[in-house]
Length: 554
Image 1 (cartoon, rainbow, N blue to C red):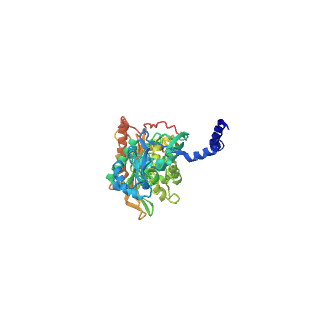
Image 2 (tube, rainbow, N blue to C red):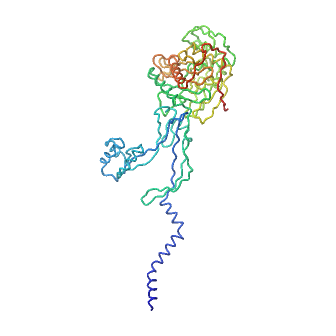
């Protein structure tokens, strides 16, 4: 055999083992390629859904009221840690906790205890640079409220991307971003490499509220001051833009992110409800503005067993005088002329016994449990605000409809909502007459402490006994005190309600709530730079009232 053939045979002999390898490679690369690629894809690549940040909430001027910020959770893997005391000493200054507290947290859970749950970026970066074996960091978002408890009863609370109360709950879908689809693979060390994103998700733009942070602060501060000086159990101050129904402030005491008493709590409003009877009487022409009503010198036996008393005994009063002196006897006589059907229709026309529709959770509708009872007692007691439950927001909306010359408007909480006119309550002429009556209440009646020199105010006081939970009877020591009004009376800008629950010492609405109204209004006037009315002392009742164009949506 020639040397050339021998070399060829030897070469073939050494190539024989390669042939199966080539065949196997051909099988893997060609025949099984699709199947193996799918298997590898499942093994090393993942599709992740990244949730977009929750939208910020701002006031009407763009001031941030709520925002979501990244925070880091620091955790430990106990299987990788031998000396937790040493690690606790190393990280205590960074996470601002004592070593003893860190060790306590380390021992409180099983394998992966949380040592800190809200580290900042700088803290997390410092921990990462320390390269301590057994410690890990995970990123998450946390909801922050940079103004502390300011407007907490409005904003509510959110946790883990879900609204739990307040605006966070009622606007949850609007505030929530849509998840983004991410394609990633892991390298040999286990680190993720992002391949692409489908950009299907989005971060929603900030939700702008109608609330004005500065006005909210004014309302809360005034309420807190009243709480200290009068030792009230609770209280509410509401401020509405008279022209469009936008809420400028909703203050409550005490404040809670889980409850908004202005829409969720009901109370017997007392004499502020005399507005309903007065409107029905004028609209149905059962009483003229000049007619004198005999008020029985302060004591009126409506039945042999029930006698109505006035705090200030009077003989004859006009309808304006009845409101000025807040005569229960006078309004009772008027409502008996009006009758229960007409009174009930006007009550509903003003929005009572119905939810206002404000876009906040848990709104109550109120009720009139004595409506079905026959006789005059249930009707007369309702005429001065007893036996009927209302919410503060309903009272505010009712008086704002006087400010708008009869347009009942839905209260709004976001600038994304358009003004909504619910209905026309009564004729403009009736509401103009009522406005003059309410101005008289402040000029020379029970609401004089609501006066603001240079700025005409129209409003009404209210005082009611609370039900004693033990005896189920009206208390002689606990009261609800109210004042509600709008200003300037001849071209209203703001409607304001003050309700104080359980004031100590003085308890009449005109004594305790009217001054709070005046304080809030004065500060708003200064904040907005509103000029005083010229020749206020010479202002006549016939001066026409104006209201800015509302462009209502029916």
